[in-house]
Image (cartoon, rainbow, N blue to C red; front, side, top):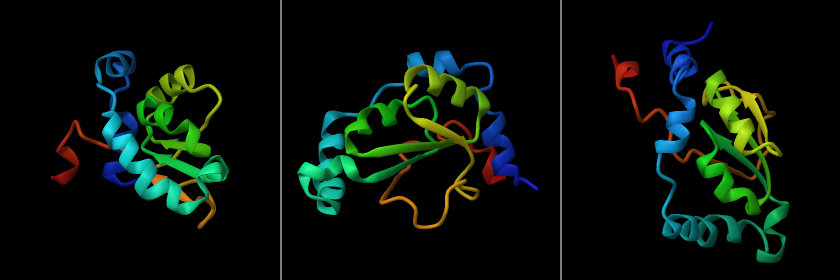
Length: 128
């Protein structure tokens, strides 16, 4: 049985994915640089960074995913069907799976890096 958080996350944004995608700002270049230099490069030789396996958890419409494409072999997980549909439009070459932080549909220890760039920022309902 899905938790209240999982149910809310899966049903959020069901009507406004396109608006979310167009209105939500991207991430600053400095953040991407810090992530690459501080996390991604130390895990692998800079010339082999693209061989890392990377999970973008709570990927939404793929704003962060698009920026980390050079970091390795990506897979994304997102609970909202609407967000997954929008994600597939902008990141057609990245697999996106139905799941959440408590139900990741991948084997344990199957990725080198997990990113959660922005998750569940629009609601405090889950806290109550």
